[in-house]
Each structure stands twice: as structure tokens, then as C-alpha cells.
Length: 128
Image 1 (tube, rainbow, N blue to C red):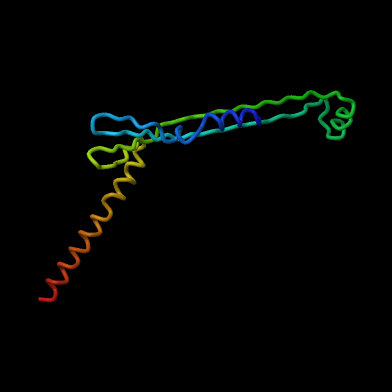
Image 2 (image 1 turned 45 degrees about the vertical axis):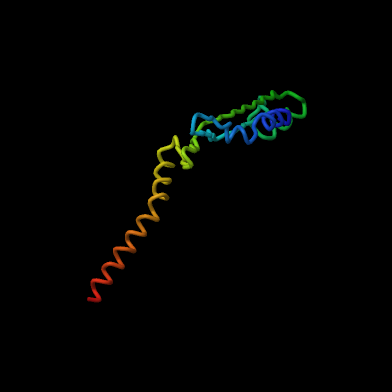
């Protein structure tokens, strides 16, 4: 397990998450990825007896079967691109939910400003 983790540690670095920039005429695109790692390990001893006392006796004799297993997986999934074009930076997400949140965060200040302007306009009209 230690060797496996060291190998993974050596193969995944910051460049795996934030990829190398891709440059064209006046545009730079930087891929952003999500890395997911999972492991599962299990094992057990199996005996002929079903009674715990009998199982213990058989274990002392060495009459048991042993089974074990492990599995692991690594996934690298692109999730977005940072695009720098003509001095403007924007995030192009591959997940629609992130795009929605990004759009809401972008327009919220504009909406608040319009509400404040509308409120101030109504106050001026009420004072007449």
C-alpha cells in the first residue's frame, strides 16, 4: 500500500489539477481538472464452524481459510477552463451547475445596484 501511495504521490502534482497553458494568437486557455482517488481493502477468516466457540477452536488448530482483497482507482476529470483573451479572464465550466453559480455571482452586484437605484428614484418621487 505504501508503494502504491508513493507512486500516486509522484505522478499527481499541481500540473495535474491546473494544466499547462495552451496559447494561441491572443488567447490563453488553462485546463482545470478534478482528481479523485479511492481505495478499498478487506479480508476475513472463514471456518467450518458457525458457533463462535467452535470457530475459535478451529482457529487454534489452523483449520481456517483466509481471504483478502484490495482495489484502487484514480480519475482525472476536466471540470473547467480559464480563458484569458484580450485582457479579460473568464471561467468556462463544463458543469452547468457551476456555470449557474458563476452567472449568479456575476450579475448579483448589477441587480443590487439596480434595486438601489430604483429605491432611490422612488424616494425622490415620494418627497415631491
